[in-house]
Image 1: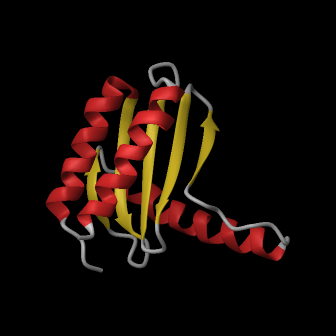
Image 2: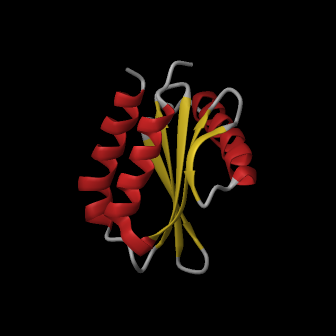
Length: 125
């Protein structure tokens, strides 16, 4: 995979700036290897397990006759936490762990998400 790690680090820093103290952790990782490429408060166990969950969820959706995942999905967790998993194409996954009380969902979806998609895409070039 050809990717500019410095640009991925800049994307992580941009997410930290946008979500402020609502961002608890984030990893951008290589889906094939499960290795984190850029992170804030890295979560290596979560990276490995979410890779398996995404693969399993896509297989389950396909076997059920449903469309596959598109770009992202959310999990509402206990303790006021939310995790968002973003698929940046077939090779890069991105996990974002947030404090639900401190992240405005409108800002996340209308500002942070489009920035992340663009920045990770730019890191490929």
